[in-house]
Image (tube, rainbow, N blue to C red):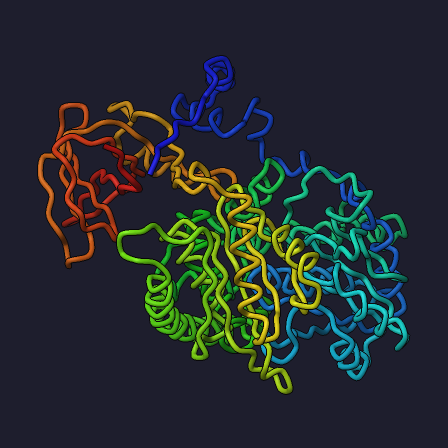
Length: 578
């Protein structure tokens, strides 16, 4: 591992301090690209106007017409946390805005991960029509559903696509669904600055545009219009859980959502999820959203039916919300067990690919008939983290009539764009990929089982072309030494309250320290005592068992450990260099 120091330009640090930012935070923010205090202002007035998002105004008109005509609206959601929160945001928002018009029936449908796959398909369009819907709205999907949209239109449905994924590319040309309204900042011609907004954020913007349209039609005034900002806890949850880049825009959305969560202003389902996760909303952080609430919702889409998650987030009955949250917690426990077993099995398969004295291959492609397609993405992520290689994990499809197909989920490292790699495989080996899509760091595909070896070889070949020893060396970005005066519990609490996440990493400090003592805990973790600023501080390196030299360069996060009612500073070790 190589520890890389983030650069915090002194001039920017000074400017942020002059604006009233704490010196430690000023240094951390400057190292993450913040150049002025304005970027840290989470006032909603600083959000980009909804009309800047291509298609939002047209979407508002379509939905306003539907609400005023009393038409039935059906939301087609994705089966992950972003899709669930986007759907719940749509349901709640449309009901808020439609109530003064005599109520418009708003329904939803979640495709089944196994039988339907991802996105709007012709079969799903048929089911939406059978429910009596007049308008079909996709959330967190649809931009690549060319056939599904076309079929929905042939059935007489009006279609609104809200999505944030990249459009499909056919023969080098971007291909969009036709004869529908599309709201997606990543579609050609959209000038919206934040290309990293999550699907739930796109739906939130559509609702802002709809409220403005209804206000222009005289349905509301500025004084009587519904409070759409009440949906921001859902927006924050979906944004963090979908691991989108926390640019200035997304940080504002998350900060506003967390502010409301900490004051208890959130749907009953979120309150119930905090309870079953053993977390405290008053001290809610982005970590809670990404590692406590998000996984419990995602587990439903992986192993059961995301209807449970959407119902939990959309109900106003606290008792019902508590029941659903408990079910989601139980499913998540099952997911953890399944994932652990699969991860161990996958690791054994991976280690069999190279001799003990050698390094791992440049890329990994794994398949076992016993793998469950609902958790292959998590397993791929764990293997990528452990071995630092682009990784694809495949499972046999359980969909009827698709017994000879494999569904793959991939995760990648910096310097290897996974979706571009799949696109290149499709060009070099036509017919191997039945379907594919995704982003730089995460992507998925479907192949025939007979083409697994071809995919593996093609994937390895591209990795050999794109990656070298330098890019395959694990790097950890750190923020330099921690001034001992900031080694305080109250400052740790301050740090935890900030919005950290993808593209805006939580602080990791780094410096050479003397190891006072070290011992294994549970044969899995290395417990340390280190000398820092003349004082002995506790530390722990989870998942690490090899002993450290007496003096070592440690990269660590700050944590407050509680023992016998007292809170003490503890270093959580992330890596070492010696």
